[in-house]
Image (tube, rainbow, N blue to C red; front, side, top):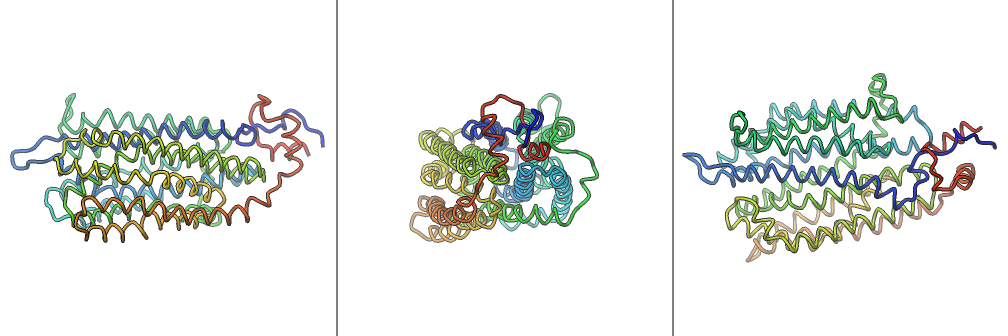
Length: 496
């Protein structure tokens, strides 16, 4: 077989050293996701600063509680968008690794169609179901009204949020994580700037209170959406953006959800857990619910960073598994796990050391701040277990083992956490003990993840052997050739 230079491999996921590749793809996603967490917490910060009215005192506490009760639906929206994106990401990366660009185009188009269908679902939820949903968690008239106002806006205008998640995955799956990051950063910065303007009424804008926080959020999401669309249709050369590919294909949809549906359920479990925790914690006090909401926004800095690395693990491992490159698959697993654990360790140290300072940032009652400090000190004990679980879930998804990720999530978020949390509320000092449900659940989930990984190693990895044609190409040029990037499977096809 004789190769011309145009037929040499070019895709960085095929030739770049895995350690550098993982950092190169992971860091932009980590930065963008950390900023996402930042603007989530900025929402909470500004809402906590809302001034009292003539008839209502403690507006900040009421507002933060309303955000906390609204969060499960927002998380469910993210779950469906991100879970669908996981299926798109894994299948796209694998198809590109196999050199099947036509299928990759159909996967991308069907992903956009599914995003539109998801928005239609949440539009209906926003119109018809929000007040009833908030009412299942509180009977307080002020919290009910504020939660309904905020969440109705966020669901009815969720077009940008849902479609941007799909387009971000199209960019990430083709290795264009920097473009995805630019779009996310732009939306986050827009949200941060608009929050105080729209909540408090600066620069001629009327003071909209909690509605202002909602409008700032959806405008930021629309900015991200517009930029991801522009980047995909103008700069993403690995995919054909022709609208004909948006036509639904039952086979492609089934493939996307074979991987993505367990991921959707897995992500949705976060929503169900938060909803369940809200109901359980209200049995302790309203302050416990608010404290958990504040803790959750703080811990997103750490967990979103870990999930950013998870998003790099999936395409790297899936691409090299599609190429049948055993060595690079194993290196992808190793570096993905190491980097994720490093993120969680840093988070553990920082949150333990600064728990009181972080909780004190918000304009909340002393009881709420004290409970938030306890939550930070106790729950972070399980962060290394959580980091390993997050890395394993990305690895499982890359191999198409979405059910394994689902089971790990069920254990860490529902099966152990909620029963334990309820039992701890029956103790003599529930304010101190209830938080231990979270690290205990992470440890139980990690045991299951290790068992699953042993089976996947035997089934998927041990029998991998790099096709001889690709091996010859890579041996001939080396992995640090400095050549432009291409697909090795396509190179073989062209050479033949």
